[in-house]
Length: 198
Image 1: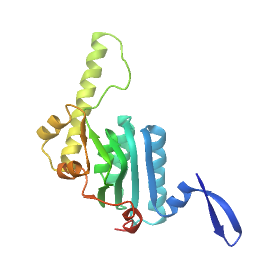
Image 2 (image 1 turned 180 degrees about the vertical axis):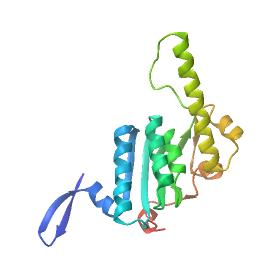
Image 3 (image 1 turned 45 degrees about the vertical axis):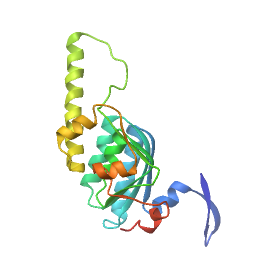
């Protein structure tokens, strides 16, 4: 989507993502993969270089996706010196829920947002020998433990509570997500801009 931008040189079309970037607002949407994880991390690096202290807002509307892509974004947010505010604007499912909970300034959700947490899953049908299947199983269990540790740290819930909550598709409305510790507050759409600096 393009918008009209006026300047001393005249009027020109500007991608809305570019305009939001100048306001330090990023959008994480759709399926998480290496491509959009890389793009988000590059934008975080760029904004950090532009101003190492001004907060960054990440709007999330994602069904989750690749675990490694989610871990990349989580690492970037948690180790970035710039305060990051996360907002679920519609859905934050699976790895996107962990990203939502990783906000370092505040973690927010709109009144009709939805959050989903569950155990890590195999992305594709697999086949192979019993030995290779055991390696896959062991790897998946290690990833599950890592995800549960991160969720426990971010929510304040014990790993036992996390393990029980993620053994099935656990959908949460905003009040439930707040009670569970995935978000700090429920905000209105207008507050996305009003509170971008704090």
